[in-house]
Image (cartoon, rainbow, N blue to C red; front, side):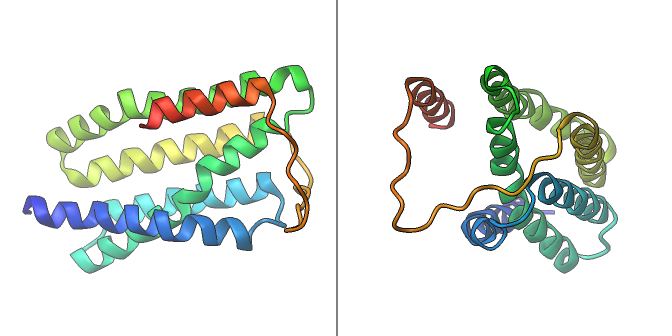
Length: 178
Protein backbone atom coordinates (compact mmCIF):
# COMPACT_ATOMS: atom_id res chain seq x y z
CA UNK A 1 0.00 0.00 0.00
CA UNK A 2 1.43 3.34 -1.00
CA UNK A 3 1.93 6.29 1.32
CA UNK A 4 -0.54 8.33 -0.73
CA UNK A 5 -3.22 5.65 -0.31
CA UNK A 6 -2.77 5.66 3.46
CA UNK A 7 -2.72 9.47 3.45
CA UNK A 8 -6.08 9.45 1.66
CA UNK A 9 -7.55 7.41 4.52
CA UNK A 10 -6.20 9.91 7.03
CA UNK A 11 -7.55 12.75 4.92
CA UNK A 12 -11.01 11.13 4.85
CA UNK A 13 -10.92 10.96 8.66
CA UNK A 14 -9.71 14.56 9.06
CA UNK A 15 -12.07 16.10 6.49
CA UNK A 16 -15.07 14.26 7.93
CA UNK A 17 -14.02 15.44 11.39
CA UNK A 18 -13.77 19.05 10.25
CA UNK A 19 -17.05 19.04 8.34
CA UNK A 20 -19.17 16.97 10.72
CA UNK A 21 -17.99 18.47 14.00
CA UNK A 22 -19.89 21.76 13.78
CA UNK A 23 -22.94 20.16 12.14
CA UNK A 24 -23.23 17.34 14.65
CA UNK A 25 -22.70 19.78 17.52
CA UNK A 26 -25.62 21.86 16.26
CA UNK A 27 -27.97 18.97 15.55
CA UNK A 28 -27.24 17.09 18.78
CA UNK A 29 -27.22 20.11 21.11
CA UNK A 30 -30.51 19.18 22.78
CA UNK A 31 -29.52 15.58 23.55
CA UNK A 32 -28.31 14.22 26.86
CA UNK A 33 -24.52 14.66 26.83
CA UNK A 34 -23.63 11.40 28.57
CA UNK A 35 -25.90 9.31 26.35
CA UNK A 36 -24.53 11.05 23.27
CA UNK A 37 -20.94 10.41 24.36
CA UNK A 38 -21.74 6.76 25.03
CA UNK A 39 -23.41 6.43 21.62
CA UNK A 40 -20.43 8.11 19.97
CA UNK A 41 -17.96 5.81 21.72
CA UNK A 42 -20.02 2.76 20.81
CA UNK A 43 -20.10 3.69 17.11
CA UNK A 44 -16.37 4.51 17.22
CA UNK A 45 -15.70 1.08 18.75
CA UNK A 46 -17.72 -0.66 16.06
CA UNK A 47 -16.34 1.42 13.17
CA UNK A 48 -12.74 0.88 14.27
CA UNK A 49 -13.33 -2.85 14.72
CA UNK A 50 -14.99 -2.99 11.30
CA UNK A 51 -11.97 -1.11 9.89
CA UNK A 52 -9.74 -3.90 11.19
CA UNK A 53 -11.75 -6.41 9.16
CA UNK A 54 -12.47 -4.31 6.06
CA UNK A 55 -12.05 -6.37 2.93
CA UNK A 56 -11.53 -3.57 0.45
CA UNK A 57 -10.26 -0.02 0.28
CA UNK A 58 -13.64 1.58 -0.42
CA UNK A 59 -15.16 0.08 2.75
CA UNK A 60 -12.14 1.11 4.80
CA UNK A 61 -12.32 4.64 3.36
CA UNK A 62 -15.97 5.10 4.42
CA UNK A 63 -15.38 3.53 7.83
CA UNK A 64 -12.53 5.99 8.44
CA UNK A 65 -14.76 8.88 7.34
CA UNK A 66 -17.48 7.65 9.74
CA UNK A 67 -14.96 7.45 12.58
CA UNK A 68 -13.69 10.94 11.77
CA UNK A 69 -17.15 12.44 11.56
CA UNK A 70 -18.28 10.98 14.87
CA UNK A 71 -14.89 11.41 16.47
CA UNK A 72 -15.45 15.13 16.16
CA UNK A 73 -18.06 14.81 18.91
CA UNK A 74 -16.07 12.77 21.43
CA UNK A 75 -13.63 15.38 22.73
CA UNK A 76 -16.08 18.30 22.96
CA UNK A 77 -18.60 16.05 24.71
CA UNK A 78 -15.99 14.90 27.22
CA UNK A 79 -15.01 18.50 27.96
CA UNK A 80 -18.67 19.52 28.30
CA UNK A 81 -19.32 16.72 30.77
CA UNK A 82 -16.18 17.65 32.71
CA UNK A 83 -17.25 21.28 33.01
CA UNK A 84 -20.60 20.17 34.40
CA UNK A 85 -19.16 18.21 37.32
CA UNK A 86 -21.59 18.44 40.23
CA UNK A 87 -19.03 19.87 42.64
CA UNK A 88 -17.51 23.10 41.27
CA UNK A 89 -14.18 22.32 42.94
CA UNK A 90 -13.92 19.13 40.85
CA UNK A 91 -14.49 20.80 37.48
CA UNK A 92 -10.90 21.92 36.89
CA UNK A 93 -9.61 18.45 37.73
CA UNK A 94 -12.17 16.84 35.43
CA UNK A 95 -11.23 19.10 32.51
CA UNK A 96 -7.53 18.51 33.19
CA UNK A 97 -8.17 14.76 33.10
CA UNK A 98 -9.82 15.04 29.68
CA UNK A 99 -6.88 17.06 28.32
CA UNK A 100 -4.41 14.66 29.93
CA UNK A 101 -6.13 11.83 28.08
CA UNK A 102 -5.64 13.60 24.77
CA UNK A 103 -2.00 14.30 25.59
CA UNK A 104 -1.48 10.68 26.68
CA UNK A 105 -3.02 9.41 23.45
CA UNK A 106 -0.75 11.61 21.35
CA UNK A 107 2.42 10.77 23.27
CA UNK A 108 1.82 7.05 23.82
CA UNK A 109 -1.15 5.99 21.70
CA UNK A 110 0.12 7.11 18.32
CA UNK A 111 3.52 5.41 18.73
CA UNK A 112 1.84 2.31 20.21
CA UNK A 113 -0.51 2.13 17.23
CA UNK A 114 2.44 2.49 14.86
CA UNK A 115 4.37 -0.21 16.70
CA UNK A 116 1.39 -2.59 16.71
CA UNK A 117 0.79 -1.88 13.02
CA UNK A 118 4.43 -2.50 12.11
CA UNK A 119 4.58 -5.69 14.17
CA UNK A 120 1.16 -7.24 13.50
CA UNK A 121 -0.24 -5.41 10.46
CA UNK A 122 -2.42 -2.36 9.91
CA UNK A 123 -5.61 -4.17 10.95
CA UNK A 124 -4.20 -4.68 14.45
CA UNK A 125 -3.88 -0.91 14.86
CA UNK A 126 -7.58 -0.49 14.20
CA UNK A 127 -8.40 -3.38 16.56
CA UNK A 128 -6.30 -1.71 19.26
CA UNK A 129 -8.12 1.58 18.67
CA UNK A 130 -11.46 -0.25 18.96
CA UNK A 131 -10.32 -1.76 22.26
CA UNK A 132 -9.36 1.69 23.60
CA UNK A 133 -12.77 3.07 22.53
CA UNK A 134 -14.47 0.16 24.31
CA UNK A 135 -12.46 0.89 27.47
CA UNK A 136 -13.46 4.56 27.23
CA UNK A 137 -17.09 3.48 26.85
CA UNK A 138 -16.83 1.39 30.02
CA UNK A 139 -15.12 4.23 31.89
CA UNK A 140 -17.85 6.71 30.94
CA UNK A 141 -20.56 4.20 31.94
CA UNK A 142 -19.03 3.70 35.38
CA UNK A 143 -17.35 7.00 36.27
CA UNK A 144 -19.26 9.80 34.57
CA UNK A 145 -22.41 10.78 36.43
CA UNK A 146 -25.61 11.10 34.44
CA UNK A 147 -26.29 14.69 33.55
CA UNK A 148 -29.43 16.25 32.20
CA UNK A 149 -29.83 18.32 29.14
CA UNK A 150 -27.38 21.08 28.41
CA UNK A 151 -28.89 24.54 28.77
CA UNK A 152 -29.54 26.12 25.39
CA UNK A 153 -28.20 29.57 24.59
CA UNK A 154 -30.24 31.55 22.12
CA UNK A 155 -28.60 33.62 19.41
CA UNK A 156 -29.54 36.89 21.13
CA UNK A 157 -28.09 35.93 24.50
CA UNK A 158 -24.71 37.30 25.50
CA UNK A 159 -22.29 34.68 26.81
CA UNK A 160 -21.03 34.96 30.36
CA UNK A 161 -17.63 36.64 30.73
CA UNK A 162 -14.67 34.28 30.68
CA UNK A 163 -13.17 33.77 34.13
CA UNK A 164 -9.44 33.90 34.83
CA UNK A 165 -9.36 30.13 35.34
CA UNK A 166 -11.10 29.55 32.00
CA UNK A 167 -8.65 31.91 30.29
CA UNK A 168 -5.78 29.84 31.70
CA UNK A 169 -7.34 26.64 30.27
CA UNK A 170 -7.84 28.32 26.90
CA UNK A 171 -4.20 29.42 26.88
CA UNK A 172 -3.01 25.89 27.71
CA UNK A 173 -5.25 24.50 24.96
CA UNK A 174 -3.96 27.03 22.46
CA UNK A 175 -0.32 26.30 23.33
CA UNK A 176 -0.88 22.54 23.29
CA UNK A 177 -2.49 22.40 19.87
CA UNK A 178 -0.45 25.02 18.02
